[in-house]
Structures are given as C-alpha cells and as structure tokens.
Amino acid sequence: MEKDQLKEVIRELKSRSDLSAVRHRTQALLRSVDPKVLSLAEQELLQEGFSQDELRKLCDIHLEPLLGNIDGKAENNPTHPVTILQEEHKAIQAYLSDLERITNKLGTEANVKPSQNDVAELRTISQMLVEAESHHKREEVALFPRLEQHGVTGPPAIMRLEHDELRKRKKALKEVVEAADKLSQEEFDRQLKHLADYIVPTLRSHIFKEDNVLYPTALRTLSESEWPSMRSEFDKIGYCPFTPKHVLVRNQ
Image (cartoon, rainbow, N blue to C red; front, top):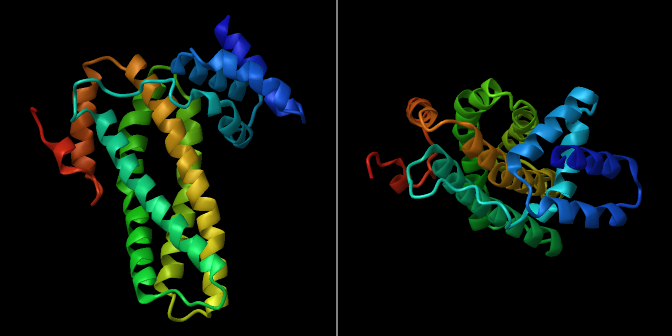
C-alpha cells in the first residue's frame, strides 16, 4: 500500500545516519505520490509517536523530490482561495530574496555600515513579513479547520507550529531593524544575520510544503461547495498590503 510504503521510508529517514541509500527510494516513491496520501501518512506517524518537531525536520528531506511534480493550482479560477495564498507566497518569496541579499552584503563587506537605503529596504521587508500575519490567520481560521473536519490533521498541526516559530522571529527582526541607529554595527550585523539565517530558509521551506502538499491536499479533499464560504471568511479577515489586487476581484 502506498501510504504504508511512505511511512516506512519516513521512519528510515529518521533512524538512519546514512540518508543517501534512503533518498533514492524516497525519490522513486514520491514521483507520483498523491499529496493527500502523504498527508495521511504523516498524520498516522504523529499518532504513532512521532513528535511534530521531528516530522517537520524530516519534511525538508522527504519532500525534496516533490519539486515540480505536484500541481497544486486551482485551475481556471484566479480568485480561488488557494490562488490568493499562492500569489501571496510569490510576494513573500521576493521579500526573502531581498533580505538574503542585504544580509549577505553586510556580512561580506567588513567595516561597512548598512547604508540608509539598506536600512530603509530592511524596514520595508521586516514590515511586510509581519504584515503577512493575515495570510497565516486566513489559513489558521478558514483553511486548516476545514481540512481537520475531513480528518486531515497532521499537516495543519505542523504548519501551525511553524507559524508560531516564524511569528516570533519576524517580530524580532522588525525590532532589530527599527533599532538600527541605536546598535553598534557589529551588534546590528550579528542580530540581523542570526534572524535572517533562520527566517529565510525556514519560511522558504514552509512555503514549499504548503504549495506542494497542503494546498494540493486541500484541493483534493474539500468539496466545491466549501470554497465560496472560505473565500467569504478570507474577505472578512482581510488581506496583506502585497496581496495582488487582481486575485481579489470577484466574479471574473
């Protein structure tokens, strides 16, 4: 059974120090995997004693082969809730790239203070990452509970955990950037790098898992009648400053 094979591979990823032998099997198995089957396999492993933190760390390894193999788009519906979330992900990814670029520049240019332009750009980036809270809230209030009502509980639990951890770091990043004029260059660079080194890869991985497992699972699990009410909840909660306007237009 495909689900049992997936569970066995994930167990091996946890128990073996040499992952190279397992990766080949993982790649072969995941090439044609149904995201919902993967979600259910992870959910059962949580019930068997895997911690959410253990499974979350393994996700980055066993989801690598999925890149490009899963279609998680809401076809022919540019205003679908999943489309809105994915378009917001694109904007967040751009902010992460800018954060990485500035952080790397400051780390390689010894004794060079961040320019006023760098600090201004960092203020915008950190503010927009904090403003992404409405994106996470829409998932937590409107999407995750519906998946859980259908018995898909594992992936939402892991995504909530990551939201909580990222929320703290994004807030800390904004506070560091706002205090740039009060910190020494060395301390500012140290704190900025520490936070960016966590936020950039973690949020990229989080987005990858949502785009390639969580959203496709939702599209395969939820009925067509559930999406309009979810969209209404999205509208009530509100959107991010960077949410593309074209995906918010009704009745296209």
